[in-house]
Every structure is written in C-alpha cells, then in structure tokens.
Image (cartoon, rainbow, N blue to C red; front, top):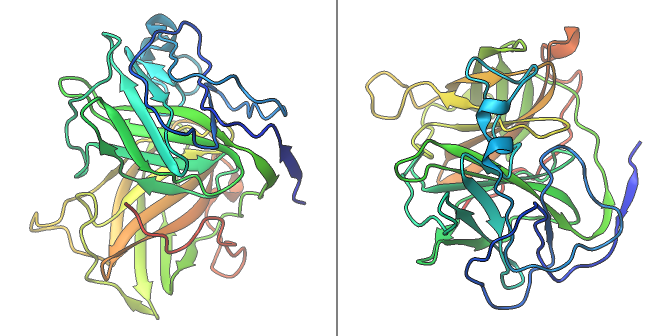
Length: 336
C-alpha cells in the first residue's frame, strides 16, 4: 500500500549540512526550490522543517570520509565503500550551490578548498550527474556544463516532490575516479512507490529488454541485457557514452552506487552493436537493487529498469508476465 508523506516547509534556499564550513564563491540569482541535505546514510531528513539557507558549505573530514576506514560487508580488499555513500571523500566534496529556479548547480571542492576546474573525460563526458528518488523512482542521467569558476549547471533533473539522491560521477585531473552523493529535497506532497518485483524483462517505448544473470553478494556478476523491438532483435544499437549501453545500479535503502563496466567498446572489431550488451557488475551485499540501462537507438536514449534481489532465493528474475514491471521510472526520457 502506498504511503502519503508530507514534505512541508517549502524552502527557497539550498542548504548542505556537513560540519565545518569554509567559503567559496557565491552564485547569484533566485534560489531553486530544493533543499540539499548532507545525508550519507539512508535517513530522509523530511521532518517538516526547512534547513537554513546557505550559499556554500562543506564538511571535509578526510579521516572519517576516506575509503580506508570502511568496514563490514561493504569493505572490499582495499577497504573501499561503494560509491555515492559519501558527500566528501579523499579531499573532494560535492557542494550544491544557489541557482535560478529550474536549474541545478553544484561544485566539486578540491583538497585545497577551491572549486575543481579540470576534469578528465570518462565515458565521453567530464561529469555524469545521476539522480533518483529515495524510493528508486524518477531516475535521471544528465550531463551538466562546466563554467570557468568551477560551477556545474544543468536544467534541474528533479522531477517532483521527494527526497532525491544526487550522484556526481567524475575524475579530477590527476586523481582517481570518484562518485559523491548528496540528498536534495523537493518539498510537496509525495506518494511513495514500492519497488517493483523482480522480472526478467521490461518494456520501454516499444522496446523489450531482457536481463540474464544471477548476481551473488560479495562478487562480480556478468549481466547480459538483450534489446528487441516488436519481437525483432535490435542489431544496430548506437554508441552512447563510449559503449552500446550504460548501466547504473543502486542498492535499496542507502542507494549505494555500484561499479558497473561494459564489456567491449564500439569499433573494437569484436563488440557487436546489439542485440546483447554485457556488463560486469559488483554487488557488495545481499539486498534489493534497481538497475537502469541507458541505450540509444534511432537517435534517442531510453532507459530500461529492473529490480534484482541479490542473495535471496527469489533473486533470479521471474518469467515475463509473472511479475510485470510497473514502469517505475519514466520510460523514453531523453538525456542531456
């Protein structure tokens, strides 16, 4: 049964509550109607009160946020946490800043306390911004533009009321790749949506995408996704972000952002442009995960979504039609 949650306290400011604050340049203009909160776990923070307005704030604590302090089931051989759980890591902080209404803006603050302005290209872009509501609906994957002052700007991908997790996936020049995450609240009346049941196939804009693979907790699984249209395999997928598909996986609860890597690249002489796209995905623990496959065909990027239960007898996707996906996201949306 859906539960109706009131997200009150309409805020005209963006606030990031971390700890120690230091100032960086101010972005002027009216404030977008969202509130950013510095949750690093899975607390929603929607307690009916608005956070105080701040132009910029951060909470560097490299000792607490560093990968080397991870422990428990998510700690790998190097003690690394999954991506997206931390707002600050290895000296870098994700910092939402003031922006005109309808726009989302943020900076990455470097170890020297200044906005980062130099990034390496990864998957054809210098910055990947992924957002999803805390109930794992409303997924968006967009690519902001970088201003000279280190501010990233994009038309707001936040689709409606709710607590959203925003992930910045990037590589600072001369540093390791990072995925940082921060919660952003859009006030209003929210109807939470349950996670759809696992299924081996889903449809989006007339395309059927089938998932094959059985992930196990604590290991890397091979996931094969096959695309067809009107029963005919699609053999002319178009390159998107350096591959024939881009896959994001989020863990229910804390929204851990998982490492997923495509196998092969377009033009390498051995990777076919469909119908199958294969990925290696790391699942650090048992639990429910939501998978989002972006693929391009006919010049349009579409997103197919799946639920996977890892480490559970019911984790194997059920046959099509047994537990149909309910279109948890927004099929057929275009990406920037």
